[in-house]
Length: 438
Image (spheres, one colour):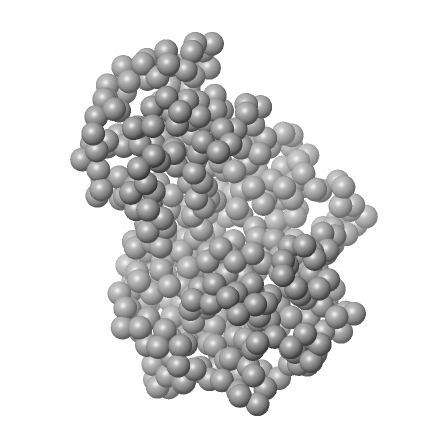
């Protein structure tokens, strides 16, 4: 499947003095698949090793040998000339060897001609809790997220639809209603599948027949996440805390307080008891963090209120599975109050895939703007509406107070621009166009 990260991989390949590349990302987002595709397509000589299978290599790097001695023995173990021209090495599940991660500095400094890509399950967690010094400045890092809506449309070969969406976004003019409805139907399908490649592949295989779509795929991915919580933790009690935070997120998103509350996890829960568990979830890329800002000015990060934040799941399909919403109810928009929660989480994942940091704004608890975008036009408020009703006192309150260049409202409505209110209307399915504002 076509992924946007391929362009980043090609940029890395073209760099003359490239550093080892490390791909971070949650389980099942397609790291191994896209790296294999890249290596096979753009290199003549390619070898992949999986450290879950190659315990001999893990043992080698546990030895107290010099980095050069380990390197020479590595070549013998894999029987491959890593220094040959147009050659690349892919080390999967590299989190199994902290010493090999540390030795990436050696490869960068002593063997810069060797092309190395690394990836692994919960690699972000392992890096944060590593006992070895991380080779800061000697490794380039990229993050792969679940497939976003643009990549979802690519999977269905909807290039012409993408072109029309981008055209309407730039012109601020509505698309033909039949095309608009087609795009909305794809948006609803995406809410069902989410961005996990295996889930999208299942929808492709059944030719968008929702009845035949295999809902067990997302359930299995959720189960693998919970198993990871048991495997990559310091104790059983920490695993329980991580699971409690994660499981509470769907309900927390509907919280009237509009922020994550530790007291909602279990009765009497305190933030200090759960902070390391929250750090684990953030490092795993299983959740996204959005901070409340006290003042929507540049730089937004300078005005965050660290005690006030929201958590979003990294995949809207998993969110719907956790909520146990039937696929037919998603297609029929029969989701009642949670429709807004789902749309907001969808936009959060889309923004994250475009490398927007997530921020939101509140005014004395009576007004709230869902997202603040730091763009080439300054700080732009973005409000998410799940349906066709788009009235919002919060957005007007923000506009009167801070006078942004314009505001954005995302909903199920067609494209448009209200010159009187200075609001750019964007359908939810056009979220990927927001990248053009950066």
